[in-house]
Amino acid sequence: MAKYVATVAWTRGGDEPFTDNRYSRGHQWSFDCGVTFRASASPHVVGKYADPAGVDPEEAFVASLSSCHMLTFLHLAAKAGHTVDSYTDTAEGMMAKDGGRVWVSQVTLRPYVVWTGTRPEELALHHAAHDECFIANSVKTDVRCEPA
Image (cartoon, rainbow, N blue to C red):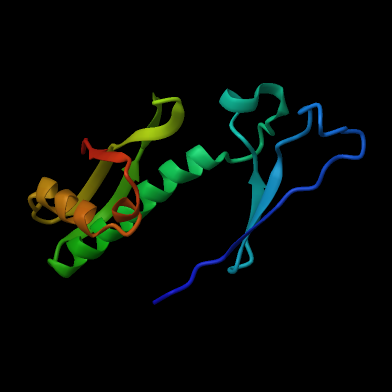
């Protein structure tokens, strides 16, 4: 099977004592395709120590679920002979507390699909995409789909 690699790197700022927990949570994510971008802890978690220019892991998790669902949906639509012109999803993740542990308990996908030609039974395609999505199959988060 395939292997996926991401490099996550952080360096303490010279003026940050670290042990007082007052250090930047900004760091870099790098991928094998050559893309590197800024990441950070969520400002909801660490306040002013977050890097507002960085993507936080919770956002990346939501985007990953949305992206996997979309790519699976597009594959299934094309395989069935349907033409998709555009697909836009404004996905939303919700945090919850379960026995003292905080986790992303629910992600709601809200895809809006524009078709050429006969519009298929879109809900059935979304259900099939959810069943086949690698990322959704890897998590315990409740992933919901509410097509527009």
